[in-house]
Image (cartoon, rainbow, N blue to C red; front, side, top):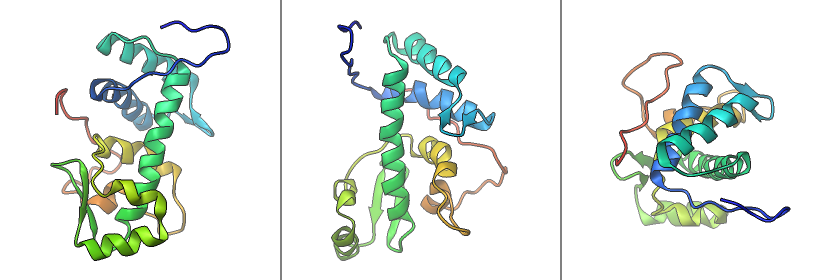
Length: 168
């Protein structure tokens, strides 16, 4: 992947690349490798290497940062939806479960940015909510996206979910 000086190189992310990136981020999240304004530099290096090694794709810190912004946006919107009555996360289908269209229509009326999430598939929600939940606490009783999505059967404290095997 090469670009003329000053031009951005855009990368189309695949599910396999997302899994490789999120695996690194979950591991480093569990190790406390977040800096105040993002990941510590060695995390970006590890993510670049893991995506390259597992997916045979050249990528850069800018590519990683851009993809993280996408995950962050998904987390911010979906977790707000899941905090409302009438919504849950369908782990089997990787998308929102909605009690009824009326509940959805009322929510979207006041939250236009959420409209595309009614049927949107977002894979690796457990990993995304684990990584981004600590970045978005917004009140003394704020919960994590993973807790909002479903009650966890295991109470391991700080343990994070493992990513699904490749191809799921």
